[in-house]
Image (cartoon, rainbow, N blue to C red):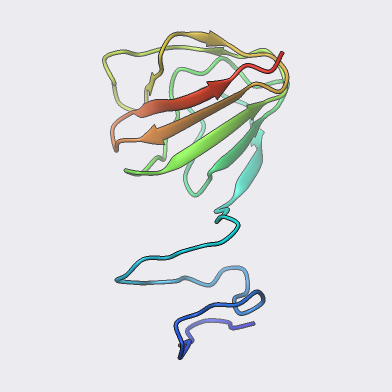
Length: 131
């Protein structure tokens, strides 16, 4: 695959064209068949964890209750998959890094919460209660 800076003549990137760590800069659209995964983390263990560069987060059994998530950028979507009970605090005022969700939530194993950042707070896109 390509490392560093490279140009792709036909504008199409095939499987294996890019190695980990390469940066893609575009003035147009990026279309993906099968989705784009930024990064995932299994190290979420505290309220106020950073979601910088993440879009799939596994909240382990030792995750503290959540009221804030830092490091979000406007338009960033994160999906949190819970492995245990976590109390999610709802902040209807949309304070800095706060979670503005439909209602407070106590998760259980395999529950999922999807949030989008508006640049100030996180807003709920959806939840799946799977217990």
